[in-house]
Image (cartoon, rainbow over all chains, first blue to last red; front, side, top):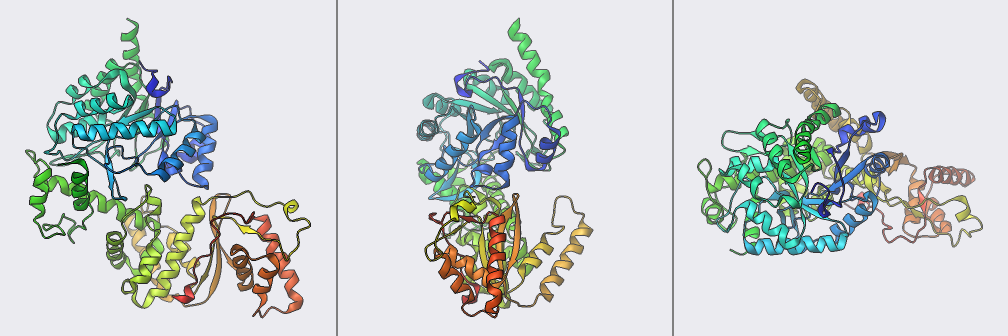
Length: 283
Length: 305
């Protein structure tokens, strides 16, 4: 299950997000890291320093692309310029699989640059699945979609979020990038049991897992990626890998970014849970 | 409600400007109560109303795009002052929301928009436009395309009357009425908001205000370019600028040189040495490439503004 068709039959361990404040440390100290996740849009450019850094990283590390603006759930058509640039980057990185969010963010060609939540309807599932298939066919790389954190629910919804995610990935026959922090954030914002979410997704489709920290406010939680992972999220992670197996895992830390070592050490805490999962599988 | 209709309705609400106290507006652009609009498609929960849940997205949208524009145009912010820049940014983003998948292009229409709305810069319009052009050129130079530079062999035996040279796409040539290059460097120095203390930021702000106030008009000619993946502002002689601009516009070498010296004060005897010096520099920097690129463009001249 860890190596499956949704992650290009790869066996990746624990990675961290490649972020500009760590460039120098990585290039000069060459730390041992299983893999880096890059934000695709940061490198969908024509030239300059970001691409030069990326090329140097690619010489030494495995890299997986993660996007933030494909908007599979948007009712409007895919942006062909976006796809063309993304394909060029896929050729450059040779990413074994590619991820983006199950969300929307643009209307009539206007971009919010946000990961806006989906109404959980069959119409939305059909549209998202169709776009995922189109993207996969164009890019010729396996796709996994990520569940987003949300702060609003719609009257129009016809099912739970995990039922919607399942509906989409089965219609599209694609993978899941399971973000257990996002599940926790949404569960607190919408009063559901996060464990029920993890228990009900098709575990055989999990290509990758995200872990992260968040910020708690009086009436809601924001997915800020600026703190260590909290224990309830680690517990969800443990259950997710019990179900999905030893899965490629990535820590996201995007704001108030600490030193490389601090971020990497936080990510490596996942080893404890991965070891248990491997042991359980062996028994 | 159909997906497209729901998304259009939510996007309209999310992209509506916030109130001065950074809350969602009580009244939608069509005059309807925003509370009613939100309640029609968003569920409340035991802690937040539909309005409050939608407001989270409304605020996040504006904080994100305003922060992005502020990062890209610190020089314009210094010229206008923080309050006016903030107000201008909101007006610009309302008129020109992002039409690109990347925030990198968010400020691509600021120059055009500011020309149409001179009230934001007032008496500093020419200075503000110069700064915007420089800051956009900075963005273009940072990640613009690099074509294979021309080698000496590519030029051997070519006739000056026919030889055409392209300029690297990442280079922007600017003719400016104010020496904004030095001002922008001053503004960027110590502009790291993440690590600077409040006292340091306040001191830096005072320096910026003083630098803008003492800036006097003075024509400069610039090449905003990239070397070793860092962006540089290189001052050019007027004739050098005219020659490079003519080459970029597709003129053959002979005509480009002629255009450069048409009204020049450089004595004829000194001109060959100048040309040699400019070409040596441009060739060493890899500025020349094949001219058969579609993106041969020169930034418009501020003197027309």
